[in-house]
Amino acid sequence: MKLSPAVITLFVATTEAFTVAPTGHGTSKINMIINGETETASEKVASVFSKLPEENAVVDKLVKTNFPGAISNKDLATRVVELLGEKGFKPSNTLLATSLCADELARELEDEFVEIYGNNFNLGGLSGFPFAGNTGFGAMAAHIPDDGFCLLIHGPHVGITKEGQVGKVERSGIALVDNCCGSAIAASNYLQGITNGGAAITPKIQQFSDFQQGAVQELILPFGKRLGRAENRMRELPYALYDSQEALVTDIVNTGKGGIKKGLAVLGGIQINTSPDTLDYFHPLKFDYYDSDGNVVENMLPYLK
Image (tube, rainbow, N blue to C red; front, top):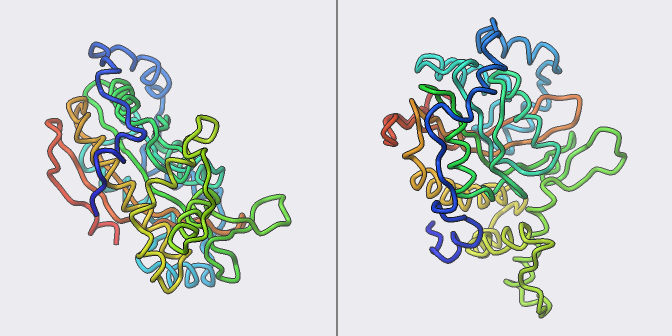
């Protein structure tokens, strides 16, 4: 699937808007925070997940039936840290960057990796689209520790209830079983209204007060037929969103890859949120490693399966 330049320009800022700081500037605070750490990344993974629920066999089967290829966040973090450790990634020399949804449930995965690597540069917005664009990526690259690495994690998210309903999820302290992802479902409903011919005419195509949601609706337009033909629209929706986001993230990385220091790992996929008392899951769809010259030198995805 290809997105037109006009669609990409919808929210991606130009690189000229950002001037990369001189080498060494902007990383001192990061180094100051993490230089005193003594735990390895693998030890941090064990510590993080020791505080979370054990794997639930019923939920595990439910998630993997609906999303073949999904693995628990615990398994994901364990494998990612091991693979990246072989390349020299460690808490003291790695900056985490994420492009995930604004929903608090998307913080689960993010927080787990923050506890491992120590810091996060947020590139994302509603539905997980990389709204920080080229300018954000350039700023992030300047903050990578000198002679260090970046792990970029991106993707949309989707909920699944204990009963197996996709597109909804139980939330802590809320009786209502809520939509997840709300932004994605609203965009899907907007698209369905267009493809079914029932959309209302409105002069408010784009407005600043809801710019991100307007962009999400535009960026999902190419997937009308795909979603209309899907056996389960809510199950297909995050994969359609991922395909749109993947095109944008790749464009942003390729534009800003001159700012990569020692190496960049890009992990893309679908976050799968479950109830508060069970582990969340992730369906990895991409795990590429870029060298210091900005070239993709290894596809690490097979090692996550």
